[in-house]
Image 1: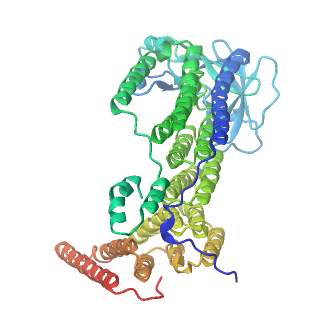
Image 2 (image 1 turned 45 degrees about the vertical axis):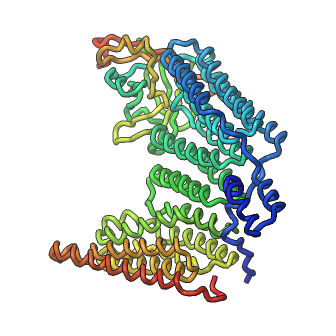
Image 3 (image 1 turned 90 degrees about the vertical axis):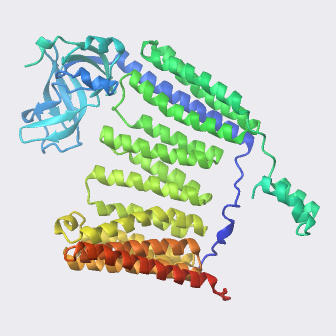
Length: 196
Length: 407
């Protein structure tokens, strides 16, 4: 049995004063910290810029978006045509589960890219095809819903003015060689050209 | 003690011969005079000008070129920290720390706005984790309670955003807040910070449990680990403060079990695999008891009564009654220890718990078959009688002369 350790008396906690770091120390640490924060913000910007500059471009279509949502938010929730995919595209040996990462192979077609296969691991693809990373959001018997992290679009003023009614969008997504993807350009399609 | 009190009353103490003039001067030297606060009017004036600049930028944000937006963010971030250091060096402690806090908030805002600018939001969690890291680091550099609390809040917000909006839980944020701030609290025990930290960590635990879709009772494993940390803490009040939020959660849970435990549907939702749950919780219990024994506080082991896994029993009235017995045992133990320790605050706490338990027990056992007016009449009389008795008991304890040898 070990002996009880001494307990500090109850009433002198508030009186325990802890000296701050010595000033030169503190200033040096602060300099590092502020520098790191500035660099981090710059790195976020650089990653965004580089993805747009060096990434391969994929054109996607969305289901019609409702401009009324912009009354409450400054972004739109996008549902892509490749968000809901038929189950036969799945190439894994076991069934996909919620939150699993997946790799979607996209093939250019007139107007927009289409998903041709979904893999659990990053596959090798033919020239012209692109791989987009996503996550399984839901699965049903014959289909699955995927999330790409591209579902939220902060709408610039210019696009906002063009959106009058429920219209589909054509979204250019840049996919960087290291896998990061971001929306680089968005066009509002006329309502009558909506996907069937 | 504040310098103000020393300045006003100190002379009187010298006159009464309680302290000498030299001692008064020594005491005064312990509390160096703070620089007078910056005048209110200049402060308000600068605030208004800042607000006007802010609204101008916010209104035109979308139309500004990307480089200008980035420059504005980086400039205000660096400027705020520089301003903070400027004021801290001139001993304007509150203003300086306020600006450091503002800088930390600006860092988060910069990450979010830059991500939005490049439509990067929703892709990964690194950006928001960096925010929590910066908070922890600044807390350590400035040893500031204000930054500590701000960082706990940031950790909670980041985690809430991750699980709610991005559908992911950032284990890194959880480990960083628990480790970085937990160690800070361990080295510099403090009651307020203990309670705030425990609340923040419990919030993240709750988010994790709901994110993983596991039985909610798993919540109590990390929750009681936080409690156990309080057992090992040398400073008793700080340890107690850290243990408060987990105990509140456990008490409310047990109260819920007493109210709804009758339905097997509810208890069915609470049952994790028996061996795994009892094994893990038992390990935490052992760790907690070891800590209590080492610090000589084994008396508080009754807290663990609330963690008895009664929900494994088949649901029904017997379970509700058994849970009520546990609640009575717990609140009774709190009251008894409070009287032993002659601790007024804890007597009040024990009284409240005891009355709360009685109210639930009464409601549970009589609502179904008693006439409603009789129900309220008897319930009211029971509570009034109980509170009168407990008050009398407390008055008796505190009026009795302190016997030597009592803690």
